[in-house]
Length: 169
Image (tube, rainbow, N blue to C red; front, side, top):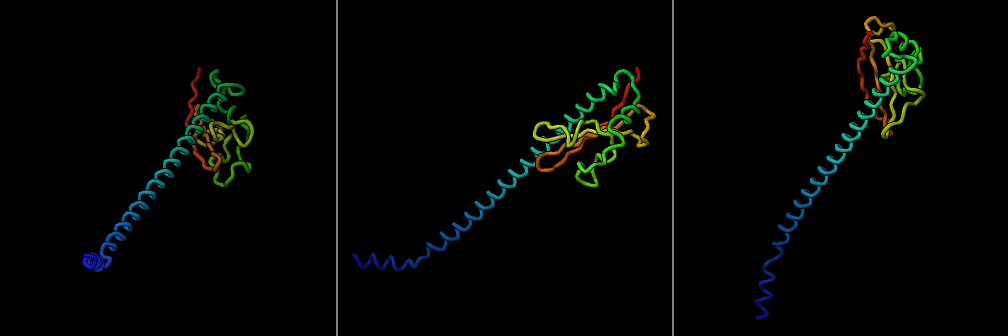
């Protein structure tokens, strides 16, 4: 009886090992693929969250800018001249090194935020600037453009631009 059991084991010759190794290889590849998908989704989700946060910071800058325009020295709600904002807002415009690049979206705009490098808000900073919508430096239609540039700790930036139309009293 013993000799038949030994003969039976010798006849198998390891054929079960090959499908097992192939199956382990396929499962490893599948697991690696799933892990790569999860990692890329997590990275995309983080980037989306940072982008949304920067948009919120930039929109807070617009709100800040609107409040600055309502108060002294601009007093737009009392019918002050738009040209006063363009003249008084840190003339002659942003040209300092705090823009970080030569293609700064606030270059030659008149800054409303007080002090560089901007106002801190929700994990980022914003800078707000205005200029005439026509670009002539002198307003003729009671409209100005306002830009709010948000920057996070990584240096990523988000820009919001709005047109502000002033109503005559």
